Image (cartoon, rainbow, N blue to C red; front, side, top):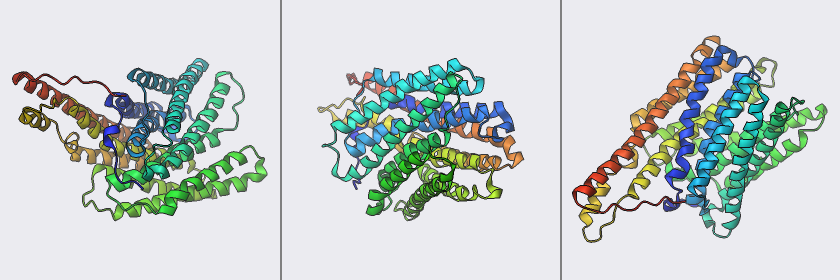
Length: 455
């Protein structure tokens, strides 16, 4: 396993920042949907607002962050660079964001035209993304870092999961748009989206991110090598069993249990690694990892309880714990790691390296904030506290605690409002550093460095 990252290969800020900006935008939209629907949101997972809010999370929040993060992890950890122009990146972001908004509108209004346009935009954007990443993996198959080959395998499996998620989702969208009977693909669509695409990608990234950024011990080699393949085999079995008659239901339930147990094993090992980490202080990203792993373990427990007579109301709570808790927490923590680094690196690209007078170069570099100073640690922890509170409130409301249903929307709104403020603060500090550098260069008659956006 490779501990080092080639940070100079990270994609340009302009290619991935719009996707990261989607996270607070769709988060605030999700909170607005929660205000719009009120406590009825928690009555059923089939409620139109529940379906709309679920896809605001899975596509707009989690999806946007993971699409951007995958480009970074492939480049810096695997030596797989995704070569795209700024125009292509902007086209993907526009189509993907428009498709997500149209899909949300379709669930709220139940209009066939919204489903048709959403399907077109999402197929074009996600199909293009899949093709681009798969071609990059193929072209770089001989150049992958030796220590990173273990994470390329689960990434390939995750991309297959994304393909299956898009396929099943498209089939249901076509049925909705043409007023036909909706095929019985919902459970399979959810399993592929959460366990195959998002889950396997999360596992792959954790194998690199926790040892490097959280200063933990490396994961056990057998776990790194076999766990993704074991989960992949179970998911293939689930796909094969899906069309079989009801007599196979106990077998399907057993496979589901095993999938949850596999992810529970990963969560326990990750928790132990974090607890024994070598970094003494708990940064915001560490706290978000704890929230993620705790949510996943609670979801594993709830999944066993869900099949008892008293646990019939727990499916919605499991969804909250998996999407908002396990995945949403990692997304938020990742933003506090990736965005400051990208802003810091992008600011350095504007520094003119004066070999005749290194004093000017040092002075310009001093004007760039350190990565830890773009977002104050205190406000990042406030966001973690509000986000963790939102998970607890939404889980409780999903389990039928009525008074929590009334405060779910305000809790979510506050959480994403502070995230939006923190990211906006980081962006403003980046802009102020550029202004300070331009003022210094003008005062000392230094030619500004021409800045070329990298692909």
